[in-house]
Image (cartoon, rainbow, N blue to C red):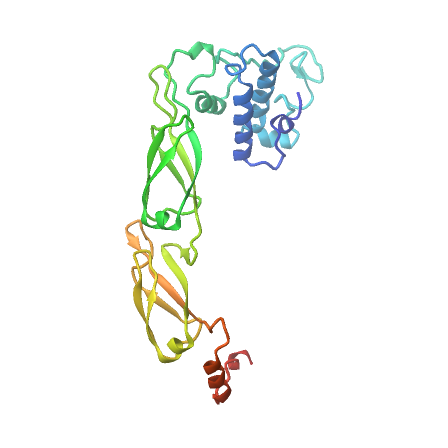
Length: 304
């Protein structure tokens, strides 16, 4: 038998999850129930099964990697013609049975995978049993505001059916949502599959998220920074007025309590960092002021 890693198309460094994913993909492609009468696919399916029996097993994989067993699971030096090491007499050949009726040849884990892939059956012998419907995996992009505040989004499933999906408040980028019972219909009275949504949260033009807190860089004029005053600040629930203390420097951080993201029974805050912004175009009055201003301080004193 070929090297099981080569059969599954994964490197020796592959993780358990990567091996399982490769096996699922190949098994679904070459399973006899999906390739009716194709002898090449049947042989390929047998090879895939045998490879996964080695590298998909937590005990056999390290033994194979250390060279203690071969690609068929036999101890090194085992002679399959006699059932003994080095071609000695006696014994029976190691027996690998792969029954296309699903009665033999599957490890418990592989059987579980076949149940997931083919709705609870892996051969003709169990076709009349209830089968779980197909589960759909879809990508979903939501806006920053939707993820923060929650809501409802209507999605279209592969067969064209519309489903309303609840977006929980505080949803994070990369999170997954499972919509139970909205996948493909089951067979022989079996339950329907689910819908698994892989969520991406679109970036916001000026808010960034830090746990349940929000952060915002707020531009202020030189006059506002020097003299202080109230300035409008955007929040997820609408603008509020923030009091800027006189003589505020760029980089000063101010907190608006409870204006962050509400999630898990708690609400974060909004942290506002002041950024003194000069006019985009040259300002004659500002230039004259700066030329006549006799500053008596060293802004870089801390760097010395």
